[in-house]
Length: 319
Image 1 (cartoon, rainbow, N blue to C red):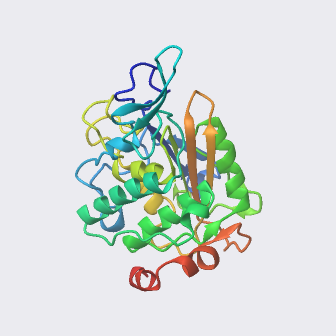
Image 2: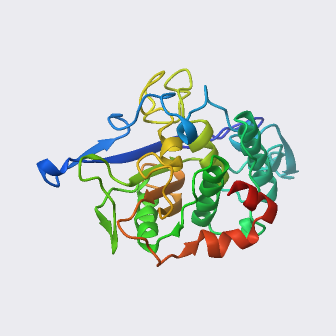
């Protein structure tokens, strides 16, 4: 899914893509039959723009920084004395500084994408994101968790309590497969809440592929999730046209569509793979669950592992 080789004045990655899933629960009167609905069919999500409060969607997409998806202009850094051909390149992008398209967790790439996230936050008049001091030392799944919670908090949605090892396992397998984490009525001992009179299970799952790091994945889910003007320019695979129900579905899921925007015991799982089936590179997954009973067994906790590293003034204001 990478661009072909050639004169590296400007090299772009393969197209980014994003997928998502909800699950409907049948009404109790018809038993426990479960009606699966991919967001691509858009059965479970209101039309874009119909939500209010935390689920209010932007008027249009914001594109990621150009230098997070391409090398920018490149110059030869070393030339072969035998052939006179370039052996290596220096490029403008902090994410692809040497014409190598792949995962990049460098400070320069993170700064570029964090600036884009904060510009997007300001455009919606919500508090900009302040990362925990140890953010770069966290694993990619942990970074996804932190970023999603910061996006939730900036809109008044309670943070997810933590990462469950059982949800993490499902998310990791899905990342390797290049697909949304599948719905299960239970992930190990974690049972998924469902309304007895019908409606959405307390579940949501998202996937992203061909993006440079966790920050880029969350940017795409949150700010590039609508109709891009054409199918070729739309990265959300469930957004099939202007105003289609699947548009902004990732964003809505991460902010509480399905699990509830007031849920205080919701948990998550996250996954990452440097490659995935189907030719995808840098595959990211996120799984949200509202459990039947609160979960205490967590591999990574918001209160224990994140809050102590956040700027105290920002944390107090956000909460």
